[in-house]
Length: 189
Image 1 (cartoon, rainbow, N blue to C red):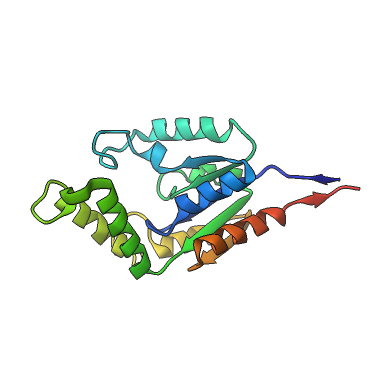
Image 2: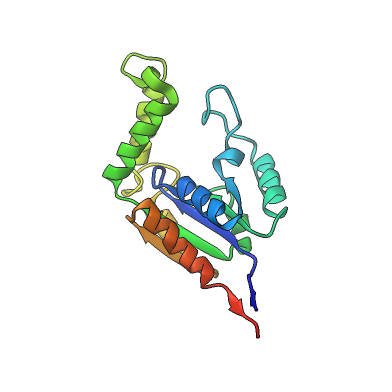
């Protein structure tokens, strides 16, 4: 008889690396609950990703959800605000995608989200431009917030199982993580 261990996974990487897409697909395949750090960090406003929640509120909300079920995947970054949840993780997945691919994805996502409002002279142009410039600094680490160096440093200090998914297709990324999850199954006779 095979008994599945509880799985509490965190999938993180640079903005545009695909962490949310990968996490949702894994949750669909495994029947796990999906949580995304942006849903806790940012207030749900008419203009998304512009107003931060109070830190205490973020932590309380996320703790409530993470302790509400046994099998979940948390996508997104906790850098600078949610590190207290690290002891909960059974598996941490670092997703890395080269800058040119990430920026292409982010530009497409920005246009899908805001349409012509991100074009020069439009309402969201400066905000979108600032966001894309921030995202472009991930590898070099020349801006506040997430950076490759910070993520590598954080990853190296974890005590749970960790894997890196580096520039793989969506399907290969999902399969790599699922193989890691299945490696955590124990055989009981």
